[in-house]
Image 1 (cartoon, rainbow, N blue to C red):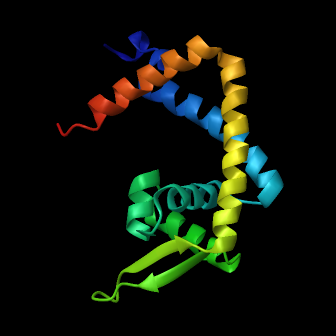
Image 2: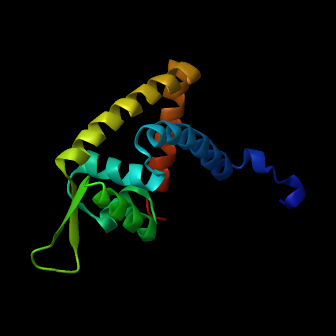
Length: 148
């Protein structure tokens, strides 16, 4: 296949990335308007809210973010007093991150926004469309998560 035969618009990685970006940007507008959060801050808050106590490395792996983005998000959430750090008892290089009561409250409020957005997507795509998309994504995730 040469460049003439290649249709970028049908290239699955391109399409998945573009669709994810459209969906993420639309949701980002909601949480940015209400809380002034950046996408990395939301993703960090969501990782900690859904999984509990984690290290920055675990947050990065969970949300597929680069460590510098995680670091900046952690700093910003700590400034808001939504997150606290505690050092690992045996390894002082490792810090555990967890939400404060204020952070947990913000997370609960943001999950309401997320549920509303999910309902909006279901309305836009239809129940069957959303189910088909979810099945397709599960198939991609299942295959791509396996080691080569």
